[in-house]
Structure formats: structure tokens, C-alpha cells
Length: 455
View 1 (cartoon, rainbow, N blue to C red):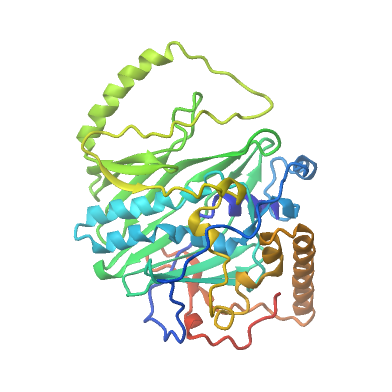
View 2: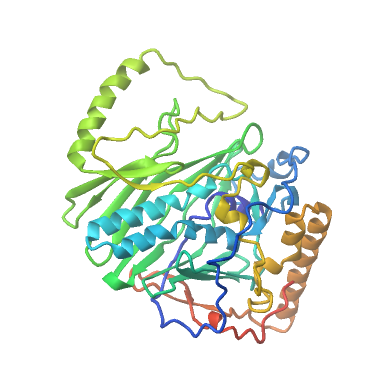
């Protein structure tokens, strides 16, 4: 559906209601090793052109409404399920591992802040819509070289809710939550409002961090080149120390000077600032002491005032042109690099602008077919057909699966049966008190009896 489209497309980073604590690691009857596995660097077929499909014919009656039940043509999809898309948060797991290794709590906060910002980096230039997960659909990913495993499940269809749980293979951390989208179409743009909280637990340090994510605006839905803007305040709270990291994702402004910029600080519970964090969510993040940063900003402002006297703004009624991107962050002397984005493959533009990490998410590795749950996204025939470049088959399979899902829902209603989730249950976040979906355990024991037939 189109409402899920832009949430899934651009806010796969808005993980809400991340709750619960780590249970003892389950007996893992089969772990797929990937130390020697060469992950693919390309998809089987290049992306399909979307130039012949009119979005306006579908959206013109939806201005000002929350989007939730509008079906979009498959040409706007990318060959991943949303459950796979949210897994892209784990591309930068090394930042969590870095936080686990640090002895100073404020240095750990810097690493966690970098992880939170890096999570939205995969959104950059991604113009394809992930497939809406079917009720009961799952996805698992084990990466021994990165030290984590993850399981996710579509726990609700109306409203759509996706729950996930990731954990360190050596018991260092737990990262978890569930996603609740809320979006509105405003004529030329779609705004996605973040809902809920995500939680990262560093078990060795007995610390729990929670945060929400910025708003996202998708420009030029009808005309012009699609581009996205992340804006709003993100607060990362360390519930053990009371420290807080406040990050401001800045709107681009009239001249586009602030496009992609993130600026914030770490403060203690008495609100004393100890560190400034700055950079771009599309490029890199740095940290520096507050006094040095403020002196540098004053110097920059004096220079900018001279330049702006000769600049004039312009309006465009047809499209919100994306400002010229300034790809280099002005690094303050004495700063420490926290994170830098990885380069995408040279052919990424022909492959849905996927990162290297995303390119491998739908790959069926050796031995996987016999060991993962039959509800895993990798077995979805519509996604597989699209990945192989067969758009007609993908469209037919997508329609068949949606019809099958509707028929199953009607049958449950007829028999007065409630849908029962398999791997997640509703519970309370012990740090925020909010309600959300908690991992109930057992997935990696590989007991997949009584699994629903959703494909």
C-alpha cells in the first residue's frame, strides 16, 4: 500500500517500541557460516523502468489524508520485503561492537549516536518501494563476520506492524523493536511521522539506550526528481547514567545549505554539555569538544554573512528542486571521526541504488533452504520473480499472494479465530514503560512445525 510505501521506502530506520531484555541464547541447531561465503555483488537483473507509470492518477484524491490502503503498481517496488529492508540497520553493527569495547560511557554514547545516524544512510537515493510483508512473514539473518543474528516477523497487517530482534553472537548486545508507520500526502510531498522508541542494550556495561527517529519528507512525488529530507530532533537516552545525546537533523533551508546536516551534543543529567556531534547522515559524523566547535561556528558565520548578501531565493511551483549537494563536511580541527558511509557499488544506480549489504539480503546461501523457516522472505515468489527481471510474473504472484492473504483473513473471521503470532508477543518496555512486541524466543531452535502457509 502507498502509505506503507514511503514509510518502508524512506523510514526503515524508524524502529518503534523496541522492548524487552535478552534471554539466554537458544540452542542453535544450525548456524550458516559466512566467513568463507562470497556474497553476491549484483542482482540477477537490472531494475525495471518506472517512467511509464503515473503516480498522480493514483494519489490525486489523497491530499491531506493518512495513507494506508492504496495499492501501488509493482513497477515502484524494489526486490526486497520490508522485513529485509529494516535489517539494513545492522549494516553498521561494527559501531555497536565498538560501543561494547569502550570503557568510557560518553565514548559509548558517541558510538551509539553514530549508529543511530548511520541507520538512515541506506535511504539515500533509494527510490524503490519494498514489498509489504504478508501477515506471518519472517526474515532471519546471521552474519558471523559481523557478530550478530536477527529475526523479524510481520505481527499485524491492519495496521501494519513489523517486529524485529537482533542479538550479539557472543552475548554483548541486544537491539530490538517494532515499527508502526504514519504518513500523509501533501500534494508534492509525503511526510512520515516517527512513532515509538527503539532500544539498544549493551549487556556487558548494564546499559540501555532508547531513542526515536527524525521526520522524513519525500519531495517531488508527482513531478521532478525524488529526493528526501530528514529533519527533527532525536534524543538518545542512556537509562543507566542519565546522559542524553540530542541530535538535530536540519531541514535544508532556502538555499539548501543545511541539506543532510546533523548537529547535536551529549549532556549529562545536570544538562552540562560534554561533546558536540556533527556531520551529514549521507556522509560522515564527527565529535569535538563544545568550546572548539562554537569558536569554529562563529568564524563560519562571519564568512557566511558576507556571501548571503549576494544571494536570492527562488520558488518553483512545479517541483521542489533538490539543492546542490555539498558532499564535504567542514571538519573542525581536533575532531574525531565516528563514522563514514561505505561506497556503493559502481552499478548501484542500475540495481535500485542498493548498497553492497542490501545486494545480498535476498540471496539464498548454501544450505539455507533446508534450515530457515518456510515463511522467510527469500521464498516469496513475487520478490524472486522481480529480482530475476520477470515483472509480469512478479505482478501476478503479488496479486495471488494478496488474494490468498485476504481469503485466509475471511476464513478466520468466519470461524471467529484470532491470528496468533509465532515469535513475538505484546509486552512492556522495561525502560520506557511503552507497549510493543517482544521476542518470545525459540526461532533459532529450528522447530518450524505448525508454520502458516502464506506463500
